[in-house]
Image (tube, rainbow, N blue to C red; front, top):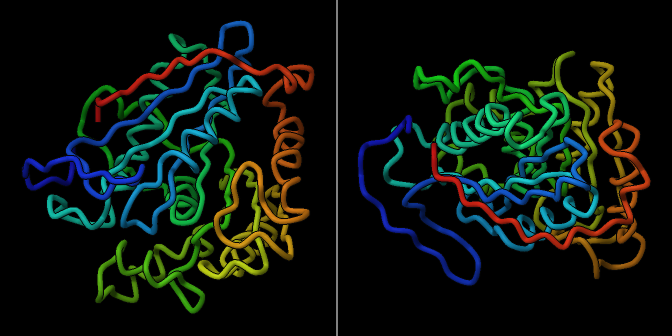
Length: 291
């Protein structure tokens, strides 16, 4: 595991929120063989880079993806607030890159198409997801067999994402990620609207105008950069929805976001549309700790 001081930390968790990890890893939610479309999504949980809210915006998203025949993996990454990290901001990125490499390295075994692997993230998880999609530096290399596999996703799903470290930054995420005294170079580098290129994958973005936590301009800035680079994207801004946009029980019209996302998946060719109404009853949960 790269970027460690060698400390042995205990796992700290309360009310389905992890604030310290002993070991990074991921939970895998596989579809049945009959329903498997060959698609997969790595989910980055929210939590402002201070905690991982892994159930509501992790496990529940994974189960929803399973109903469409999409395999899902919930990332449990090191937090930049960890005392064990040498370079705080690189910890989450390294774990996300490593997770994507693990998925691709097992593609044959898990019956996953390596050209149909995406990333999904809400809030600060959206920042990590876009970092995975826009930064080309391999921070996770430890000179092993996984180095031969790409860590970059083929598509992104972003829900109320943190994007910028500039004027419209979410202050808590910024400080937890980069510390109290980041350099201007760090602020610019991790303002992911600045990192969009012609190789950036397509993105589906959901925002609520009344989000009281992360200014929706974050997502708009990212979409603007995508338009400027002629990158395919789908942006939806709803008047109400707040910050914790869930699978259901959201206020008013924003509840249609899951249907819009499913249609976008169909447009990408991720699955056969006839499979969207098939719900998987398979509870195949695998914890992998091989980072």
